[in-house]
Length: 278
Image (cartoon, rainbow, N blue to C red; front, side, top):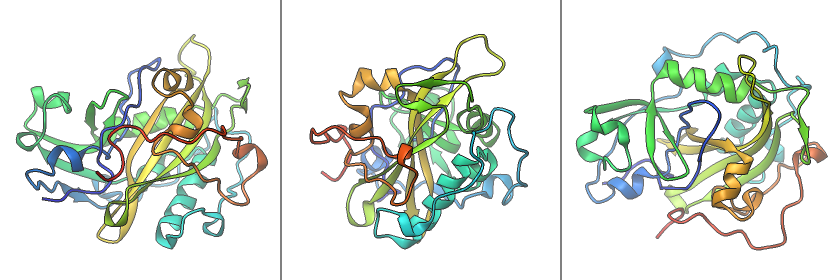
C-alpha cells in the first residue's frame, strides 16, 4: 500500500535548548510500504477548523516585514508547489506562525501499522493524530495542534534581532529548495537559516538550520514535515549541512536578496541515507 510521498527516514534534530517536535513526513513510505497502510490525511487547517486569524507581529520578529518571494522566482518547475512555497517563505519572513500552521497538513495513524522503534509514542498510544515530527536519529513523533502551534511559535516567531554570526544577522534566510524523490513520490524542502532566542530563557540566542518539506496529496501541496535544529547539531551528522540537508542540491530562489543565498561548497551534495527512491 502506498503512503504520502516524502515519508522516509532522515537524520535530523540532535538537540535543542528546549523540547521540540518537528514534523517529518518523510519516513512513512519506507516504514509502511510493505503493508500498504494509508494514513488518514486532513487538509491544511482542518485540525483547527479552517484558517486562523492573522496574529499580531511578534516582539522578537524579523528586521524586515516585507514579503519578497513570488512563484516566478521558484527554482522548481511545479507551479502549484511554487505558489505554496512562496506563501510559506513570505510567512516565515513575516514571522507568521499561524500562516505556517495553516499551510501544514495533519495525519491520523494507527500504531498497529507503525514500528515502535521509529514512533516512540506508540509505546503508550494506539493512534497518533496531528503533525508528524522527527529528530536526526529517525525517530518520529506526532504533535497535536496546540503543541504544534507552540513549536511554530518558537521556531517561526522567536527571531532574536541582536543575534549575528558568520552567516549574518538573525533575519530568516531562505537558502533555496531541495528536491527529493521522483514522479508521484517527489517532495520539496524549503531550506532556511535563522537566529533564534527564547525571551523566557537566560540562554543566549543561536543559529538554527531547518527545512519545511512540502508534499502533494490529491493534487494539493502542503507542509508534510518540518525539520529544525541548531546549526552546530547538523554539523554532527552532516559534513556540510548547507549543501547536504534534505536531499542536497539546494537551488536558490531567483530574485531573493543576496544574503538569502550563501555560497554552497564545491563538493557534490551527498543525499541523506534513506531519502529518494530505492
